[in-house]
Image (tube, rainbow, N blue to C red; front, side):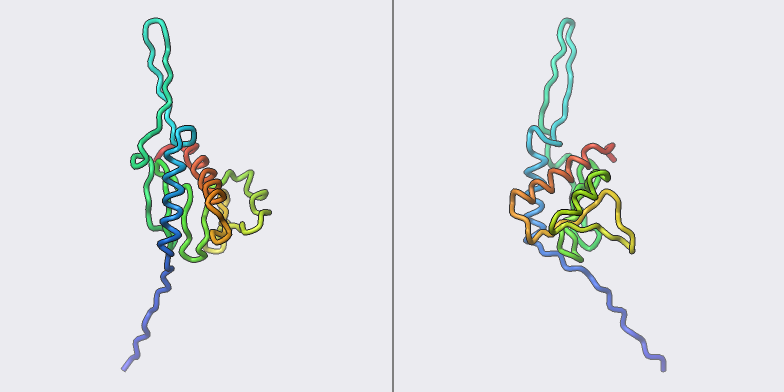
Length: 151
């Protein structure tokens, strides 16, 4: 008789309190009227052009998906930030030319997937972030994601 070996899949456990904290920060950033959540529309009349800036509805621009063993937050279809289930850190989309500078900060390391460092991403230690620092990281990730073409 052949003995069957049980395959144990390692599933990352995401701290729901951490996800809720990041979700709140992402929603706050997207709802800011002067941030990446603004859309501009122009109306032309016979003699004048009027430009109006208004905040887009948060739910129309923001999506949340389970990815990478954690929870990712997407803005217009592009991932901005994610709570990593493996490390418990915050994966943040950053401009590739700023990545090296950001990696020099305490509590920041490269995001590595399948043995390769991901360009344009850093992993910030969530445990060391107060609310203001978390908002700054989320703003950075949302700004970079918003600059990409909608998917």
